[in-house]
Image (tube, rainbow, N blue to C red; front, side, top):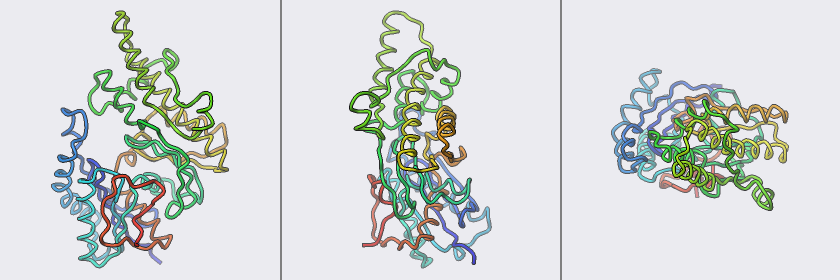
Length: 350
């Protein structure tokens, strides 16, 4: 029997994504982004993002369907990002999804786009393990999840108490006057730096915090430590090596992320760590996690770089998981949830 064909719609921030997924097969994934419009502001402008979604959704949808020659009548279900994200951006995608589902008479699923960052791995590496540790790392999230069933049972073991990893990278990029977004530039410079030249602090890694927050992260103090180092060096006329600063900072962030993810897997008897989110593209995170997990006998599943940023494929993949688990479609009147908890995989009917 042919598996259902799911249309996925992503509009949580500045990417408008449309994809078609059948089981573990990605038929098409098209994305339009408004990222280039924010460089002069140093950050996302929600109103601009919402307008960009309005302008690009239909062309992106038409382009995706035309690429694979699929008609609307062939779609079995529609999944749309319901949160977390920017309310205005989410609203555009949700309204479009509701209009399509209503006119086609198809079931609609409002899904958690952060959990979708983990679900998308199935399109690259095959069916997800029955039980695994999920490490979600992005500009807005740094969380460790225990996933018993990605459609119905996700538990949060820990998360950031302040800045997310991607957010901290962008802030350090600003401290070094790097172009927006700073994260990729910090990563690039770190690869040319000396990892041991500057040792920055690891948050929640000592004393009572080490056990009390064994799966939690804190990067705000680390960002402050970088700022103080730069201020001191500039005041004394010391030559600053941006490469070494980025390398030391990157190592501090990735040391925390990887050590706690591996610990969570060992503590909970999980043989696999699945990573998702924009920051999963970070080169040092990939190398260090692979090294530490291999030493602990744990498999690591990392998404291809094209699946790291927000995309329709992750939403469609999440939709296929909900359908396979027999989860009921969402009610028609659900609203965007900008703070959708990570334990909520979808907008369940009342």
